[in-house]
Length: 347
Image (cartoon, rainbow, N blue to C red):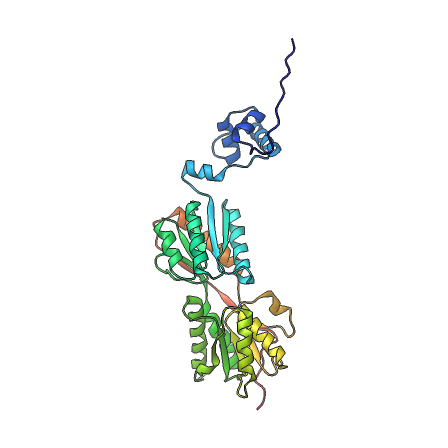
């Protein structure tokens, strides 16, 4: 009597398991595990058979189950402030690329500058048992909370917990001083600063760089020219319209980030003024639009992709050596001079 053995296809509603892969490849589950993870010996022909069976079945390893079993996570979290801003999108792209190179999966949260969203994201990452977290923090709360749960943290772009967590930042003070000094060197004496805040390390250091350049040029600070211009293009535009309509308007503007620079740029155009004929403009953060408009905009350039990648490298080192002293890495910036800056108009 002939007995036919028929393989029953997996139900579409059931996820393939490691047992299914083992049966399809004709090996044990432990062999499948060694072949898929690369940990332990598996002959090359056996490994190929296992990989082929896994691909045909559509098998995806259960990362959470592996994490619980091994007590080692290969996932990292990244919390950024606003993915609508190209700066944070590029930072996340750099972090994602480096995480992938190092064998980590990345869990991304956009907190939209909300303390509540940041807190909820941190709680979710603790529940997911991530190996570490990269964050562009809104306050010290998120780093303190994650650290209290034993999760390594790297603060990126700005720091609230320097000394207790690692950080990766750029030369904010140097960049702002260089940009403002460039305007001073062209002969400008009335230089406005558009800035979102001065409480965070980014805003504070850029403000200090602005003040240092004015002092070096023997220019007295005019508080009326320091504009707290909100967090978005619309706020910056409104404040710029108010300032630039006045009879005693500045001859130059240093915008402390790319979003504020866009608001100032739009206001200048709406008022029928010219760049740099009436107003010189220089920005911190070299956003792509700045080299696409006419005239092109001078800007302090930072390698934002590398900022994200460096933060993952720092986090990976922290995960490997949790007891080592905290480190803050400062990346260089440079001023890219384009067409938006020139000597002030003759009075």
